[in-house]
Length: 253
Length: 253
Image 1: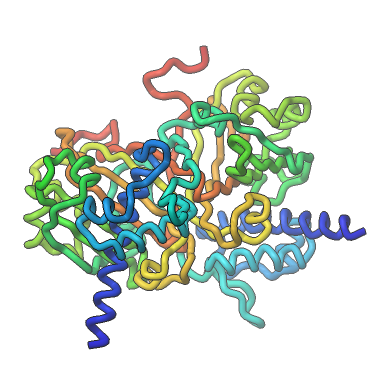
Image 2: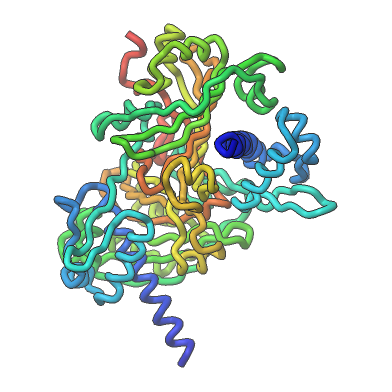
């Protein structure tokens, strides 16, 4: 008997997760005009499930910060979640230019003698200095990411005279180096926000962050820019395409 | 005076984050032979910082589940974090074949009449049934991801007779369809684990998950496989390359 009840609870939780996943996609892709979700009864009909399951699904989305729920008003989209392109190497202001204005607050900018792992990644001799830069980046006034950046000195030092509040580093680096950027290697992770990062990003402690480590090279192949970026998980998605076969490979034998 | 103390605390927290980010990368890339990190004093020298800052950095990594700290033993890598390729469309067992054996526990497999958003994404008429599949996927016996999958009926139904525990869906679909997969659109997010997902994945409530929504097409362009995947953030990274210019575009004018 108790076993049945457990199974029932699991089934409803599984079902709520399914509904939440589908609603999440519609929310992220602007599928609800005016940011207003249908009433619970209508969603229950659409998903052919109970109102309890719908309520549980909406609770999951509220806990993620995607929706707000008010008696009498119903369920509304809480905040836009912005798409960061994964198809091409772009700075934040470049990739989000349709969504508003990116402003960067410079928290730290200084010349440092970097730890060995940074020197190694940037291909520098021990003792060679780098520019260390820490920025809090906001879109339309809301904090989006905390970026820690290590730049090779010859392209990094001219940035002391540039407008870093209103420009992506990428665009400035290309002007300084007199050549475009080439490729970047990146690693993506999901991590919980530590208390200090949470405070800087205005998010609860432990909130899920999308963490990106990215080493960017100039077109000539030289690594110049090593970044550690923490995006607020409730404000940003990464979007891209993958192909089954590499372009060089033959398709299906 | 109090203001100074606050600044000092912030500076140490910022410094600890820098150290933690660099150590995280070394851990993920197997930079510590035998999984043993150097002593605090040695790390303090390497990063030219105080032992207190090093201790705070190691605490951040412990909270992420990346390292364990024991008196007398020091700091050891807690669990391997596996790399999922972002350069090509691959199933989990395909992308992790060097790291061990992927086993899939089928929690649910059934024919359903899907909700409208699923029909729409898969290009189906209202009322057309799909195969719904829920799998808990483990690598070397440790839970890695919870996958919710909707499959177009003609390629999904033959899966009832296949070994889903030991095979990626991708490979089976290609055999069934008699053609390779083509491309997939994917969206990546960081979300906190809800209690039921946390229980299934054996992770604490609220743990950061890497969430992937992926719509996969056959080579002929037909969408056949819609998946919602929750990866444990402490077990998996996504890795790829980005190019500054699209291949079609001219480089720097």
